[in-house]
Image (cartoon, rainbow, N blue to C red):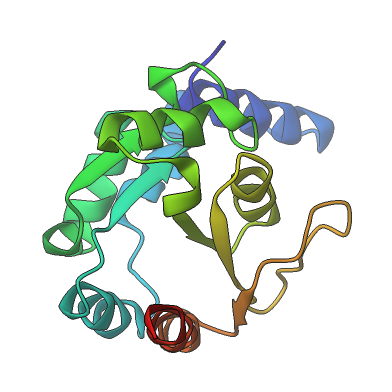
Length: 175
């Protein structure tokens, strides 16, 4: 097992070599370190606020190392929305393996069926569903579901649409 940062750096170096490009250690670190400062999509804070106001407990589950995930969430000003930040480093298995999803359920003291993964990556959604979680897919431009995985019950073009659909689905289930 290598953490996601190590894998990403190796992939970057491999890509540079495949294109005959020199990549200094400083340039590689600047590129890899950039993930810590990515801004959220514009609708994300409002959508998360709606879900939190509706009573959902929200956590993150990332392939990134814990320090990177913490920095990314903090730098994007999203930390108030989440009660926990989970990393696959705890189980040393990347998503879509079932182990990370099961670890989150175990840590939260719930069944996987009580969790819903929201993501714009097919492997996150597919892995979560195969581990027994519900899922929602954010179909941003250039993103597509993987046909070999089951289709989630919630799909939207951005987190605002997904949050709305989850709120509707949950209110119907509670009736």
